[in-house]
Length: 269
Image 1: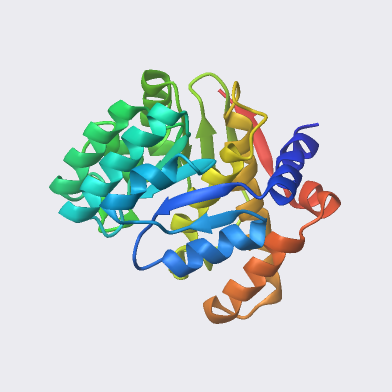
Image 2 (image 1 turned 30 degrees about the vertical axis):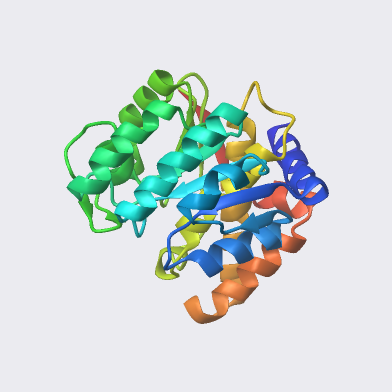
């Protein structure tokens, strides 16, 4: 069954501790590192343009986040992506606020020529990256997951990538196989960094290895783990302040039976 397949990837990450090179959002670096550690991965925040090409070849995956993009970071990202691609290191793009701001939108659309393995963003970001009309409010989406389905499938097929649209309902597609996940909680968007950390978590899951021919599985597993752990953590806490440590605990300790009984999913076209 799919839940057991997905949780086997969770176990793989915990056992293999993939090294994730994070070119992260400065606002959410700490959350990103803590989420990776809780899930069993090993984060590295090497950002200097002079070091990224050397370090990315040591990593199992690269996570690129455009949240606090400036010219210097854009240069470092380009160098890391090119070096990683040459070394066969898979990478994940989090196109924060793409579609809402010209500089990052133009940069992201050029960057995807280097073929990210996975793109993870909210509905407005995925629509904007695909060339659709701007629909975001800063880093927040004003579009629904349903609005972004066509853009997600088109990007996935064009780039031979997996595209994950996350929100109240998550939609993950490789253009041929798609799934909806309905876990998580409304408190999660009220905590800085849950989305950014999720993109790095996806990188950890694809970096754990074993699914090179079908990265849809580890991408779905990462989104599912984050959502199930978030839903359970929200049940136990009073609000955003207490949510974060409870989420980290659930990411670290979630077992296969609880995961399977809590996961809500629907495979779709």
